[in-house]
Length: 111
Image (cartoon, rainbow, N blue to C red):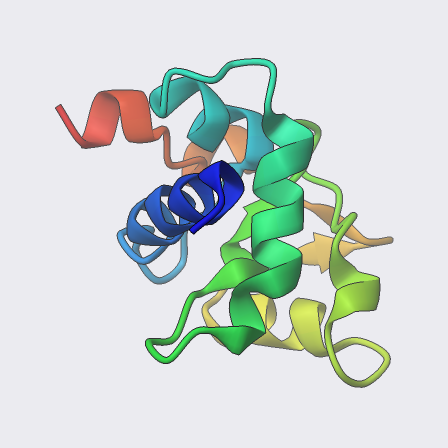
């Protein structure tokens, strides 16, 4: 097992805890895992999450500004947005609206 595989597994554990109707960022997960400069690696983990046996809600992980930067990794044109909207999250022009009110910070929520 490569070191990145272990990190990816930790990312998936955190991502699976994001509640329905909430979102977090790549950086927030990286910071929570003690790897603050590894937001891009969290993104790579999300990109690979469809290969996991247990479902990973990768659609709930966005960039720090609330942009759906990972949407091109989902099947279909707007699947990421549709999944978020199905959970009551408002998305306009690929950006989460009211990000502050629905943002889930693992550092605070998983004490």
